[in-house]
Length: 392
Image (tube, rainbow, N blue to C red; front, side):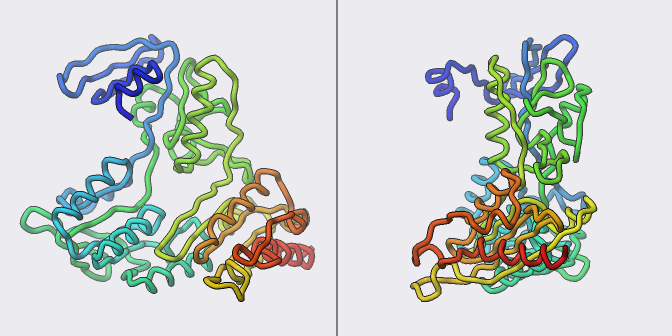
């Protein structure tokens, strides 16, 4: 989307290569620097939206400034890495961090023919999953040929000839022509903090359900802002594009004089590692324990299609429910093609506050190319309901 398109189609004055250096809430103005002319000027506002997103976490270890180390947080950063792979033809890549970005970059680099290693400080990749489900993802990574190094901490980067040559952990040194940092992101809120705008969980900007901050005339949306978790009933910071888009829409309606609210999130996310699909929503066991809730779990193994149908493959579904009430608390899925989008059924049930018993009779579609007569989702909630009843 170019500034010209914004102007001609929407009447929006989009000023690229400009940076806001300061917000003055008392006088309702922002200090803007033209990055080409290097000149700054104060611009007044009636209403201000802060949508500064998130920034990748970059470790402060020796060699971290060496060329050839990349964090992924924007379209341009992805284009940069793609150009490096195309033009410099690196042979060995090391990905540091086993979250969504790390896993997806590991897959992309593997498919481009690189030798890929992944280093994760924790006991599992994708720590938004429970350990038993995370283990399935770790197994999938090894199966496709990615070198996986768990419980290893990054200590330094080695460089020679003006670029990175290796990643040093507390256990080994991994040669590298290219390094991808997938260590997660943090809210990009330094500008807001300097302006005295109150921050909340994980340093994200505190907002209400209309995306208003505690500072008059200022709104915030996207990865820099808080959300409200509909299951835990607590503020959270979840940096996902789906959430950012919805928050931006709500903020825009309100700033434009309308009325809209953003009720909250359940933390639904999907990813893919070659043929394996991974999905999660709601709370995981660790989060449920932190809330002090008693819960039951059910993990089932099934097939993505009718077992006798061509290309049917494995799917593992885990459901978590509150003891007593049977309220669905969360779900996780790992399987081949056709597995991940089933998480949307669980996400819908979480938004509706359904119990696993209520979910058993959901009228889900059936045909052998798509599911067994009892979809794996229904098998999982039926088992979870039994666990809830036996624990009551």
